[in-house]
Image (cartoon, rainbow, N blue to C red; front, side):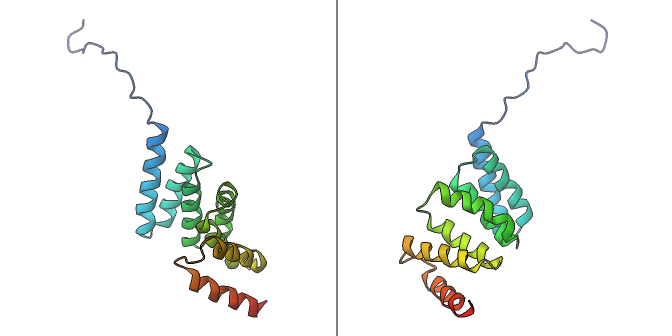
Length: 141
C-alpha cells in the first residue's frame, strides 16, 4: 500500500427509498407547501406522489386542488377526472371538478359535477355555497 492512500472499503450505495416512503413524503410535503401558499412547489410534490401511485385518489385530488389554487384550472381537470373515475363516490372530486369546469366556462359540466356533489354529500360543509353557485349558473345560462 502506498503511503497516504486509504484502504478501499466496499461501500454499497444506500438502497433506494421505498416507494411507500416516497409517496407518503411527497404527499406530506405537498400538503405543507400548499398550506403555505407555495403552489408551484406543492404541485411538484403531488406530481411525485401521483407518479409513485397513479391510481391514488388522495394524490390526484391533492394535485387537482393545488392546480386550482395556482389558478390553473385547465391543468386541474385531468387529475380530478381521473380521481372521479377511480372513486365515483368522492364528493370532493365532484366539488373540485365543478370548480375547475366553472373556471373554464364549462357551465353544463360544472352544473353536473356540483349536482353530483350534492347527491353524494347532502349535508356537506359546502352545500350552501354549491346551491348558491348552481342558482347563479342557472340564471346566467
